[in-house]
Image (cartoon, rainbow, N blue to C red; front, side):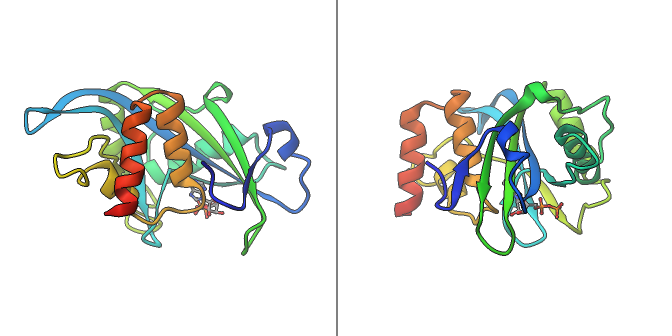
Length: 199
Ligand SMILES: O=c1[nH]cnc2c1ncn2[C@@H]1O[C@H](COP(=O)(O)OP(=O)(O)O)[C@@H](O)[C@H]1O
């Protein structure tokens, strides 16, 4: 599933697209063996953020590919938004997952997506550092964890989360990650998507 207007491009081909700006965003996650209310498995802690515009997205931003590699640019953006040093978090080419181009206004953009798994302790250190980051309370209103369970009412949890407004193709990137990394079963993903549409 991909938002209309976004087409998959290879990392290599995206460099020769004329008139496109490049943006890189990263999904950071960790295994979480904790249980909500002592009974609902948390499964994973997966970070997104509430942006200045009230939309939800992943940390990252625009990268000038004339001056930097995609990963250097992304690490710079992550440092600004998450306030952590590269000893704690350094995204590399091996974390790269996908690129999607859009001609939707106001500008032509290629959105590159990265996924990195960390220990829960390091993920928590990143959350704590984010409160002290340069962008906190300005461009980033807060780092959030995505609820990956569905509550007994069939709507609370991931279905409700998916009804938020997401920036660009961030929602599709999230679902793609849940699916390809098998963080949730296909059935659980489908149920959450349809329950969210009905809720
Ligand atoms: O999580 C995301 N996934 C995919 N695209 C995103 C995400 N967040 C922002 N974008 C898109 O990436 C571009 C850069 O936005 P962003 O606000 O992150 O950059 P900036 O902080 O450098 O201004 C915009 O076109 C925006 O729509």
